[in-house]
Structure formats: C-alpha cells, structure tokens
Amino acid sequence: MMLILVLSVAFAITLDLLLGDPKNKYHPTAWIGMLIGRLVPSAKSYNMQSEKLRGILLVVLITTFVAALAYFIGHAFVYLDNLNFGVISKALVLTASVLAIGVLLKTTIAIKGMQKHALQIMDSLSKNDLDEARTRLSMIVKRNTKNLDRQHILSATLESISENIVDGITGPLFYFAFFGLAGAFVYRTVNTMDSMIGYKTDLFRNLGWFGANCDKVLNFVPSRLTSMMMILASIIVGGDWRNSVQVMRRDGSKTESPNAGFPMATMAGALGVRFEKLDHYVLGDGNTEFTEKHFKTAISIMRVTSVLFAMLFTIPTIVVLSYLGWWNFA
Image 1 (cartoon, rainbow, N blue to C red):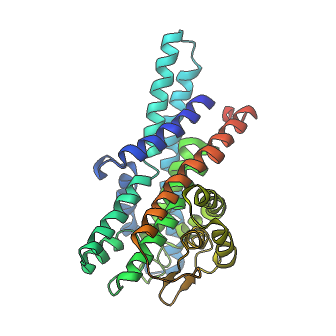
Image 2 (cartoon, rainbow, N blue to C red):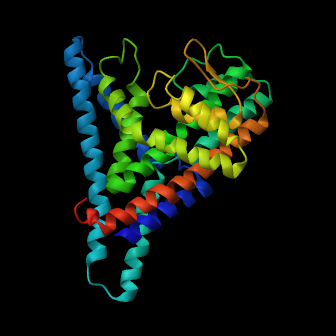
Image 3 (cartoon, rainbow, N blue to C red):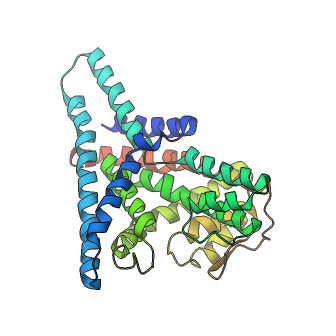
C-alpha cells in the first residue's frame, strides 16, 4: 500500500506539470460543482436557522457521498494488491493502481491549470485589454473586478497564485497523506463549496457559512506549512527568502481569512512587492509596480513549492504512517 501511495503522488505531480487539467466534462471537481449547483436551490429557505441547518446537511451529505466513493475506489486497489498473484500479475496490479490513483489524485490539484489562467490574464494585459483581463480574473477570485486598474489586476493575479498553492495543490496533498483519495476529495469538495456559496451575501450568508468555516478549519495547518515550503522554494528560485519570512510573520494574519494571508504575505515578501486589496488589506513593503519578472518568479515558486511539499511532507508522512500501521485501518 505504501509503495502505491508514494508512486501515485509522484505520478500525479508529474502528470499535472506535464498535461494540466482535463476538459471540464471529464473532471471530477466539475462534477462535484454540478452536484452542489443542483442541490443548492432546494436547500434555500426564508428562515435563517432553517437555512443554516440545511447548509450543514448539504456539506455533510455531499462530502459523505464523495468520501465514500473515493474510499471504495482507493481500497478496491488495496484489496487487489493484497491478493496472492504471481510476480507478473502483481506488477500489473501495482501499475494499474498507481495509474488509477495517480490520475484521480491529479484531478484534485491544479498547478498547470493555475499557471494557464494567470498566463491568460497576463496576455490580456499585454494587449492592454483591461476588460478581458478583469473578466478572466473574475474566474479565479471572489472580489469584484469590474473597476480594477492594471496594477490591482496584477496584484490580484499574484495573490490568487499564492492562495491557490494551498487551495489547489498542497491542501489536497496534505489530506491525501493521511486519508488517501477520500481525504483529497473531501478537501476539494469543501473547498469547491466555499468557492461557490461561501460568500457573506444575502443569498449565501446562511446557506454557505458552515462550508466556509469547514474550509477555514481544513486550511489552518496546510496554509502555514505551505508558507514554510514557499520560503524554501524562494531560496531555490532566487527570491528574497529572508524578506518572505519577515513579511509572513508580520502580515500573515492581516487578511479577513485566518489562512489566506500566510501564503500571500510569504509570496509578497519573496517578490519584494506589496499586495493590496482595496479597503481590505496591504501585505508587504515593496511597491505595486509589478513586472513580468515578478510573475515568472511567482509561477516558479508555485511549481517548486508543489514538488517540495510532496517530497518533504506528503511522501514522508505516508511512509511514517505506513510503518505505524495507519494504512491497515485508514
């Protein structure tokens, strides 16, 4: 089991870096989003307490369904691995298990996908098409992008890259280390619910509050651990790692989210820039004149952090837990 999980992590990271995301109609996260979208209207209520309760049930039902499905898929391969096959058959089962689990794990992470979205925004800005850049930015951030100028669009893009390192990469890898596919998919489900209905608006304030708070709890440790990996990545790619440590310590808790500020502040420090969300926060000491070099360095930090997190946390955790017998029960 340990070998399957370790090889699956390596395969998933490699597959994502090389190929990126499949089309939406083949993507499990898109299916989860469709399921959430179909159930949300029936969960709405004119009574605040009733709507909050329905929001709790929505999270519990969807995550239970996803967890059960992912658990049984993952353990079907464990069952096959424990059967007494010959050497050749055993190798075939191992290969099939790594391919299947690796592909499914890959669908919960988005390294190249985030890079692609960011490149599209940068392409719009290179053509001085601010309206297109704002539209593309609105697909990856929650804030209102309608009136953002060029520099605030760049800031929001770099902030999104920073935050996505946790939401779209290290978060799933963190929970995969402890709970396999079920952990990665439950994290991705909660994160998707937060991005869809975790808004403090009249429409979603009650229905989405539980999902939003679950997301905060699940991200508490991964966000801080990721910041440490980002500092190591900054050393490797030539960022200002000393400044990233300083800014992370000082500004990490300045955002409304108890978690998002840590990777964003770490990135701001490493790039030597200042991230600013109007009327909300300012992270870092540099200026807001962003260049293509800042963008390329941010992408490099994201990619290197992903590999470091898998190598220094996910895989070692799987190995240790395997020797402790955890995977006999998980």
